[in-house]
Length: 267
Image 1 (cartoon, one colour):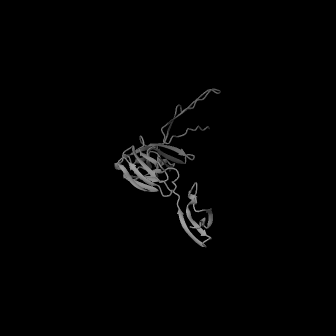
Image 2 (cartoon, rainbow, N blue to C red):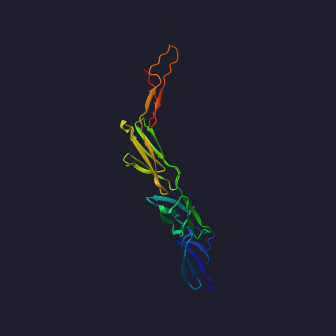
Image 3 (cartoon, helix red, strand yellow):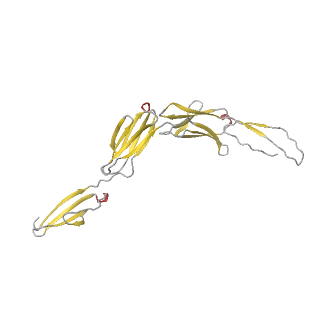
């Protein structure tokens, strides 16, 4: 204008600057908003105004996170990197090439038959505020060996605890206990499975199976556990010694699942 006007910058009806140019030296997301520039020319008795919408781009915090969710006969890969403006663009890539892409979170499902142990999948996150992309990686691998079973007596021998373990693997193996009719006992769990049985005599001789399933292992792996009542033998049913001498009383425990405890009782 001629003659020059007086300029005022407002944000949310509050003055933040005077002058035609408003420079925010270190702009952050807190500065996002609508700014109004007012111009007043007292010589011409005129007023005018205009608005500017300021948007601050900022990346999500940290790195993308990758996860694996197994399902019967398939696996779903999940990649998430929330927040940020605009949202980060994520894309999966696997042994066979690029996969799906989406903002903030992206999933990719595969049939188990198409996968092999050691398959590597990478999720790449890109954002305008970041020069190099951010990555997270998932390597699928099957656990080594097979499940291991054991039993222990708990809570004053009132219960027998069936335990099963199959560590390792990505995703972890799913374990479940089965009875003699191959019916499930309780729910399944990852890497370890525990089931409690009420201690009673008719459990002796019964066999239980822990089934381990993993999307990269066919067929399923099992371990078997048979409960056995212990047998107790004594070395000598009658022992005689002279008064003042040592009396050796020996007993031998044979078998028993879970392991039994020996306890001597006096007269």
